[in-house]
Image (cartoon, rainbow, N blue to C red; front, side, top):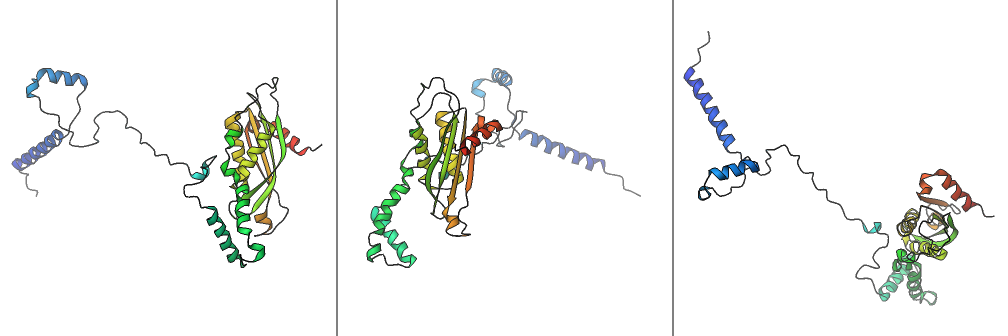
Length: 280
């Protein structure tokens, strides 16, 4: 047999639960609408109004408005992403320090930097580096600022091919060299043909990868000239592959960038490649 429940005990438990519920509801602060705020202000004298009390639960929402989307932090671009990097970081070594570094490398290679044939080599290397890596001191954007708009309405393809260049692999500081070919469809005018060759030299005379250099050439021409289309092809031989590693000489690497009309129309790509390969 089951004992009959005590009605007084059950009533007490229900009362306690109701009291707990009332206390929980009273602890929540609900924001009144503007209309309700004005009505309450009319009923309560100003002197009797309590001071504003912050909500006891921060972040509690009592409406159906969507929560604001979190603001995503945008990471800064790495230095390698800059089209024209800062000339040289603060604290650039002096000429004397650069020559001392060359003497250290000569000793590490196993030779005597003080012998007659190598005595002036550190100075020669420092001078040569100033020319080989002179692209850090040049601004490719500035090379394309002057545009010739009086071209008698010419809007067909402009192609400059077989631009020779010499660069250095950023992984081993070993040269790679080859030819660059650039074509574009002008919209507002054309630039001097030599300027395109200078753009190639600006990016080639830095520590590079062939892929990055190809994209940089296309980027600067696209951003300054805003042509209807642009095509860039770079073909080169890398001595870091011929002289070391697998030691395979004569291997050619080709990279391309197609923008605008050249990207959207395969026929334009065929036309560009035909003009580049047709040497007659």
